Length: 269
Image (cartoon, rainbow, N blue to C red; front, side, top):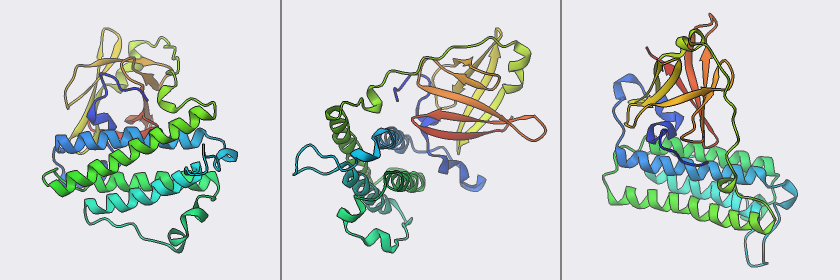
C-alpha cells in the first residue's frame, strides 16, 4: 500500500465515477479528489487488516476496557454510513440487522463483518463521487471526520495486530515482481487512451520497445513492466495493470490494481 510518484490522484478514484453519464461528466474538484484518495488508502488498509486477522482472534482486545476486533469492524460499518449520508442525498436503506445491539453484531462471523465493511466503503465511494465541489464548511467537516475515523481505527487495529505478533498491511514489504521479455508486436495492441473515470484518463504509449503509462492529471510517463502477456507493473508505485480483451480478442480496456481495489478503465481510442 505504498504511494508512488506515478499513480497520483486519478488512479485512486472510486469506480462509481465511471458510471456518470456523458452529460454530467466534468473534471472533478481537485480538493475532493484528495479526500477520495485518502479514503481509498485507509479504507483498503482496513479491509486488508481485518481480512488478514484470523477469525478466532476477532474477540481479542488488549484490555477489558478496549473494543474487540469484531466490535471495531461493526462500528466502522455503522460510522461510515452515518458520516457518508451527510455528504448528499444518498441514503443507506436500513434492515432489522442494522438495529441489533453493537455487542451482538461484534460477534458476527469474520466474513460477514468484512463484507459489510466493504459494502459501507463502496457506499462512501458513491457518496463522495456525488458530493460535488468542496465548497462548504459542513462538507469539509464531514469529510475530515470520515477520514480521521478511518485513519484512527486503522492505527488502533495496527496496534492490536502488533500485539498479536502480526504485521499491519502498510508495513509489509512490497511483493517482489520479475519482468519478462515481450516483443514490440505483443505490446502495440495496448497503445491507446483509457478512461478510468469521468474526466480521468490514462494514456499508454510505446517507446523504444517498451510500454509507458501516464495520467491526464499530470506527472510524467513511467514504464509498464510485463509479468505476463497481459499483466504489467510499475516500479514507482505499488500498482499493477491488467489489459482486457473483448469477445473478438480486441483490447477493450484495462484494470488498475492498487490499494486493494480493482478499477476498470475502458479503451476509448
